[in-house]
Length: 308
Length: 269
Image 1: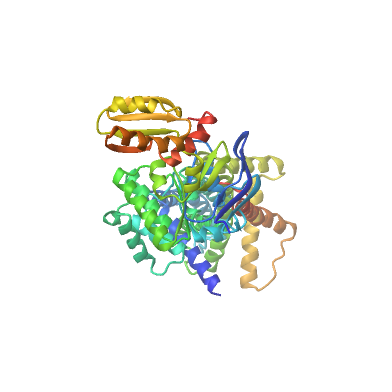
Image 2 (image 1 turned 60 degrees about the horizontal axis):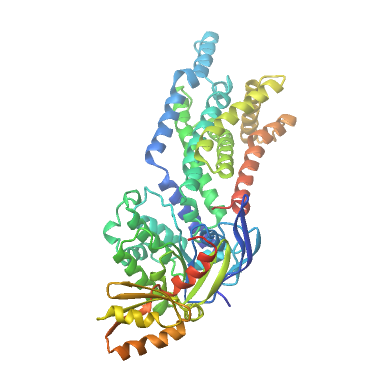
């Protein structure tokens, strides 16, 4: 059974088609839900949570209809929305305590404190939410998403407003929760390099439809990168000339010690580069795709549609 | 049974949430303004002083101001309570319901395992109670100041009657807040609709709106009084139907529609 499944999901806002027959699947693990602004990511999440009703099509979470069984779904799902609203007069601890009560958690107060420690907000537990910075609000939202001990956590742009260390910590936390507690994550984000490190599944949405989806490993194989960076210790020009002579190389440019190649046949190129370097007896410092695997998949689909 | 208990606990949690969410400043302002308004001689005491004046003139030794005279000559419900309740309910529901749509607080709350019906009913209950208490306290105080015993049964009947105009104001305000989802409209429309409605009723009826409804309110008061003291079934005829429709059925329908709309139809983007 899929954790999330939608079939031909359609949603209009007036004349605007937000979802245009969305067929989303997510079996388990950590799913990156990727797409440009206005692609329909937030609308999809709102439909999955029963905040919006689809005009046509079906949407299921844990096999439950998202509109009819929204309450049951929300009992098993933790959520961080893109722009969440909080009661500004509450303290962080009181807010989480009340949320914990809604999830029927035993000892809600201690659970609230535990979560505040986890997201590094314990020091601000008695502060009013209205006094929180954007980053602190994001952390509070994460604590709220995790407080109900959910089977699935839906995060809409979770790293927005977090500083670099906060982002790293969040990614690490997600990886840990999936590995140790088998909590599934469905993450909508633009920050592909971060997602790439933790995602097991990716769904790419553009203009309200899923353009591709599957395990990240398979997508990476399917969309072999076409731009590579080769960094050598010395004789950069010589290496560049040799690479240029390969008939699979379309375009080449040199930036310091780095050679950036756009290729036609990635598999052949990956076989040839180590050979050339070995023949020239030069040390190879780096040889990798210019962009991450997810970015490559994303670029192919979204660029074709002309959205970036 | 356990499920029922859990549901009840969640509803209590939501009530606590709503109560804590209403700013103290707003709460204080409402109680203060209602008290000042009610105790202002031009409003309630005008009725009281008229009665007192008449009674003193009639029999200076046997001064007995009746609560009915005080309440329904002219009607305090129509004169003082309804317009102010419509105005204050508009402000309360705009702050506590419509604004939560605008700042996404409601969407965030509804990602938790709470039933939509419970959310909207908790908002209604808390705001209704605040408004009811805001009116009940100063009116009780006023009656005591006028020399009516706090142990009088009439006061408790009056407290029951008071529930109806406030129910109407709150139902109207929640209906507007839920359907329009904009705090500006939610604050302004309830008093405007109230004045529009009273004006329409005023011109369409043979008797004026004020006198008509005041008379009906008084009849309802008397019917309840008779029912309790004489144990007799009240005979109100067609007037009872009107008062039932206007004072009870209309607000309940507005509230029911708001709850059903919020639960089954409303979409939160």
